[in-house]
Amino acid sequence: MKTPRFCIILLSFILFISHFSVSAEDDYTDSIKTFLHDNFDHKNVGMVIGIVDERGNRFFSAGSMDNGTDQEPNGETVFEIGSVSKTFTTLLLQDMVERKDMALDDPVSKYLPETVKMPAYNGKEITLLDLATHTSGLPFNPDNLSHGDNLFADYTAGKMYDYLSGYALNHDPGIKFEYSNTGMGLLGHVISLKAGKDYETLVVERICRPLDMQSTCITLTPELKARLATGHDKTGNPVTNWDFQVMAGAGAIRSTANDLLKYVSANLGLTKSNLTPLMQKNHVIRHRDSPKPGDPDLGNTAMPWFDNGVYNPPGMELLGHAGGTGGYSAFIGFDKQNRRGVVVLANQQGRFSSGSIGWRILQLAQLSGKDIATMMPVRWHVGIGTGLEIDEKTHTLQITKILPNSPAAQAGLSTGLIVQKIDEVPTAGKSLAECTGMLRGTADTKVRLELVDSERKHTSKVELTRQRFLIDE
Image (cartoon, rainbow, N blue to C red; front, side):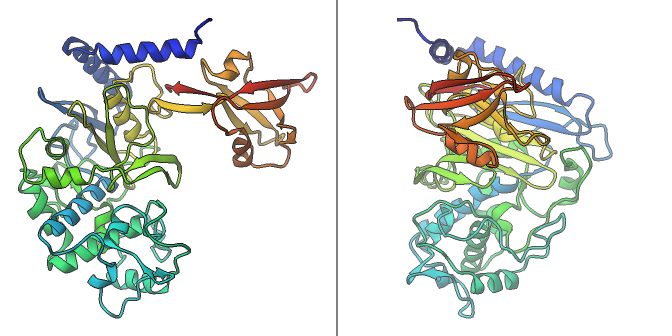
């Protein structure tokens, strides 16, 4: 029996990982350098990539800090790290539990003023664990935020209390993953109230000082400000730095690649730290196939680490966390089995995904030859392998992409074809989400398409079998 081409590619990828050697890693780091220079040379934005393993640290960078100097970013350049801060917040929680100041199953209301009415459902209260695992039922962001560029700057404890007191849950807390800045900001706040110290002080005293992370904080000294890369939006325009009050635990920290590699090293046990056992408690997977607004899913989620649903090559166990603010994007992640970690920091948000780049580096997948704006981690996918869009002029559902080695490619389908029906259901008048939903299904199930060519002269019908295959984009 003839072996399908996508199986051959998968086997080649597995063999590449299995035989990965020191010399091969040297070749791979050369490809990182090429990727950075191809995408950031002569730009007003830049990126720093740091890698750590048992051999030590390596840093790669290109582009510009755009801070009034002609400096290229490096391991000591300061960036906003956004939601990567959430991993610090949950680590503080584990520290509070270790000190017996808090317990994971404590209700959040225990640590708030009596005047605050915490939402509950059928008498079930939100716990600290619910906040740490994104299962509180609280929304992505509170709806009484400002609508300016600096979203969280004037969001006070009073505003949070007003919001919580008026919010109604629609299901039991603790059962459903729903990514929530609101919940993580609240968690940082109640930890601070219980400890009697502000969030930044706790991060610095309990995490940064023990790990010798001297450039990680929220409030920058003049020396750190001089090392801060200017943030940019997706078009390359400079933007305002984000400020936080009560929501600090959701995304306020600023750091460097050098410091974050120390943090990753402690998570992996590469450096000796009393924090490592607490960190590893936060690696335990608690939910699977977890959704996130704007993303297909976060895959398997821990507290609050996740695997983003990416392909884990044989012998690897990947976890990470991405972050972003108005002008910065960040990612830190690691392979628990091989004790290898990566940090990706950039002073631009929206043009590319630092997370996609970081996951690909952990997967040892190629960066060169990929479009930085659209590249994705290597993933398993179940489907027929088509990209679809609804044409703005004709309002028809059209095939815009055929993935190599997919059922659609094997059937000889091409871009430009109009999908008139899916399983005999007309696509006219349906949204793109509705149409893609009809195409979804489990592996080895069939789907029937009625197709019309772009000139509407020929109609054909095809039956495809959904398959599970790797996508490397």
